[in-house]
Structure formats: structure tokens, C-alpha cells
Amino acid sequence: MPRRLYQDIETRSIINLKTEGMYAYAESPSTEILLWSYAIDDGSLKVYYPFFNQPFPDDLAEAILDEETIFVAHNASFERVLLTIVGARFLNPAIHAQIRRVDRWRCTAAMARSCGLPGALDNTAKALRMQIEKDREGYLLMMRMCKPLKFNVDGEPIWLEDEASMLRLGQYCMIDTEVERDIDKTLPDLDEPYQKLWELTEKINDRGILLDTRFLMRLMMLTEDASIEINNDIRRLSKGRINKITETAALTQWLTDMGLDVEESGIGAGVLADLLNDPELPDFFREVLTLRKNGGKSSTAKLKSLTKRSNSDKRIRGNLIFSGAFGSGRFCLAENTEILCKDTSGSIYIKPIQAVAIEDLVWDGDSWVQHGGVVFSGEKEVIQYDGILATREHEVFVSDEDKISLQMARDLQLKLYRGEKDPYES
Image (cartoon, rainbow, N blue to C red):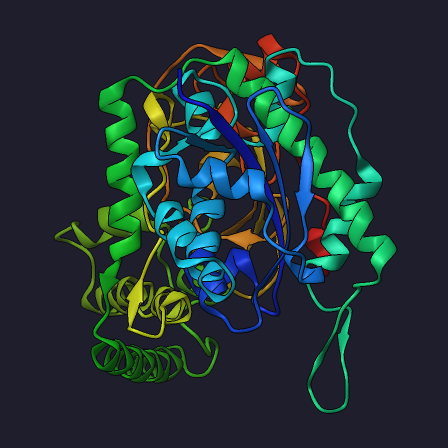
């Protein structure tokens, strides 16, 4: 039976992993692999410290060079990509060549999601009723060590990197490796077709999508010019009462004052479509509402996000997530569920879900985010758990990155994640 090499790494960088993506993070010269925790089958847990310039461990090298050995990690994409890109700086070429082979990797997070379980390590273990002791102190240390404490006057990063902290980080990493091994022993491997699909997903993410950056820049310029023109038009038509077409509350009030009944319903996408389809709508209101409709398409935020995530070869990578059979993403909150929203003027309101406008930002626990509007309108059975009233299949966060159905969260008695930031200070 093939051996299994369990592993977890800890890294640091000046790059923001969440906003710029794993591949741009790995590509940055500032990104370093501090340590590499590993265990072979049921063997003892060990830590290799590239940070200390330690010689590469013989047992780790032997396991990697044995082509029958299976590499196992939780969210294995991270270990594979970082060891491929950053590891090229210090790994023996023969070892590096084996690390790059996608077919040798198995991902316990993909196994968990394919079984309908949350993908975050701690939550997978909790869902499997594993008795693990959370190392909160180690987690907080990791969060301090993975990014600069500050920058000096020359712009150079200052890190937390003393020997005691590095060794303590190694202890934290070993716990994660042990939990990962327990998960692997509990869950079945992906069926071969799904394993092949996971490997294909990794290859597609590695190849990436080529961006026409010159075209993106031109699009951003065009949309910014369009925004200026639209705002000038609405300022003229409203005689200075509305400065921007995105000032929803002011625009709604002005249209109401002018005799168009939109005060209660607002001017979301559905209302706009109904009004513009009315053949009896006066031309003046039609012009204003057309400006409103076009103004909603003039944001450059997504275009800027694309350019920020691109690599040096103008490709964006890591765009696909292998979620197994449980990641449909469809959900439905019950009518009158209160949603924390921020309108285009920056004002914060609590609204019933049916009153949330397409241009409103909604609070996801960590930041104000855009949304795609209503995905279902009708009646469905709902359940209540931990303050949420929603359909059974409604997806809820149980960590900062993992969503499962409300039914499963209730069955597993998992506490819902509500973020750690104050929306009124964001």
C-alpha cells in the first residue's frame, strides 16, 4: 500500500493573500516558506525549518523521491503551489520535480467537501466529532508572523522571527498536520473520476487566464468617463439635487417629489425594469431611470480586482475551487429577515431582505460586499437556528471561509461565524 506523506507549511509575505490570490502571493519575492511540518504514515511528527537553513531531511527526501508515496495536505493547492513556486529557490531539482506532479497530491479539504462537510480544518474535525484542542495562542502567533509587524523608514518589512517564536510556530503547525492525518484516516479518498477532476482543476488554475491588460485599462477609462457623463446629466436634470446617480436615497426622494411613486419600493433592478417597460412612463422619467440603469454598470471595481490578481505574465490564476457535490451556492433567506446594508451614500441601515436594493452593499461579517440580487421568489419551508431563519439548504458561514447548509450546521451544532470586525468602523 502506498505511503502517505502528511504535510503543512507556514509562510510569510508582504502580499495580502486574500485580496491578491495564492499565485500572486507565491510569486512575490517577499514570500518565504518558514517551516514545513510533516509525518510519514503513522510516524512521528517532524518540522523542517528552511528559515534556519537546515539541511533537507533525509526521510522527507526519500519519501518524496519514492514515486509511490502519496502527498496529503488540507487545502493541498496551497502547499503544492507554494512548494512549487517558492520551493524552486531552495529545493533539490529532483525533489522539486516530484512536488510539481499534481497526480501525487490528495486534498483532505476536497474529501470533506465531497462528503458535504465544511472545508476549514478545524470545522472539518469538529464535524467529524474529533477531540482536538484548539491552539488559540499558536493561531494568534501565526497571524502575527505571516505578515510584517511594520515597515522601517526605508520601506523594509520588520518581522517577528526570533527563534522561540519560530519554534512555537512549528508546534502549532504540527498540531494541524496531526489533525489532517486524522481526517485523512476517517474520510474516504475521492473516487477516481473526482480525483481526476480535482487534478484537472489544479492544472486549469496553474495555467490561468490571459488578461488583455491594455484593454482592461481602456475599459476602466471608458467606465470612469461614462460615470462622469452620467453624473453630470443627473446633476443637470435634478437641478443640483443629485450629485451622483448612485445616491439612491436622494434619487428616490427626488423622483417621489417629482411625482413618480417609488418611495416604498426603492429603485432596485426589478423596479427599474418594470418602470422602463411601462409604455406610459413620461420621457423625462425614462431618461432619468435609464441613467440610473446605466450608472449601475459603470463600476471599475471588478476590473481593478482582475488587474490586482494578475501575475507577472498577465495571467490570473486560482480562479476555480473544487467544491465536490455540495457547492451549488444557491440559498434563500426568509422574507423579512433583517439584513445590515450600506447604501451608496455610505449610510448604514437594517432592512428586510426583500427591500435590499441591488446597489446596496451587505455586511458579510468582515467587509461590505456586493450581491447578485434575489435568486428565488416564492414560498419554501424554513428552519431557525442560531438566530438565522432560512431554508434548509441556505448556506451559512461556519468560519471565515467555509459555508455549509443551515440544516447541517444545526445537525452538527456548529456556531455560525459572524466575523470579528465592526461594520460601523469599516
